[in-house]
Amino acid sequence: MSDASTSSGVELRVNGTRHRLSLDHRTTLLDALREHLDLTGTKKGCDRGQCGACTVLLDGRRVNACLVLAVAAAGKQITTIEGLGTSGDLHPMQEAFVARDALQCGYCTPGQICSAVAMLDEVQRGWPSAVTADITDETIRLDDIEIRERMSGNLCRCGAYVNIVSAITEASR
Image (tube, rainbow, N blue to C red):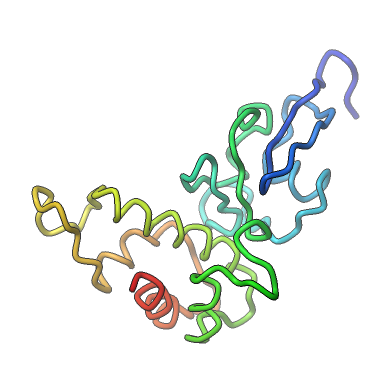
């Protein structure tokens, strides 16, 4: 239970819509999305930043929503899986995941897709990873090893990794 001393008004910009919420200062972005805005596509897995199921985009960069306080996300653009596409107009990454059967139970899929979208932006910007062969080269070669390294923060309990890598490869084209 919160009172005036532990809560504040927070304005969150989620998927292009502004939301004014009264939240306890300790409320995570994940809980604000799921419990206060009913955006349940973002999943609560470990609630410790270890599985990536809660990955969303914060000003275009991937973050674990369970580790970000909602008050810290105020004024930033938040994109969840619901904001990437709709059932009638899927994002290219969502289309690739469907086409490549890159999901089994589907629990990790929203976080995987959000992470993959941001990862492709990182590659396009020329940000190297721990396995980038030549960090002086302006073009990063996006092979399976590079994709696996960059997606290593997103776990899949079902083991759909081969198809996830295939989907990301397809979407990167």
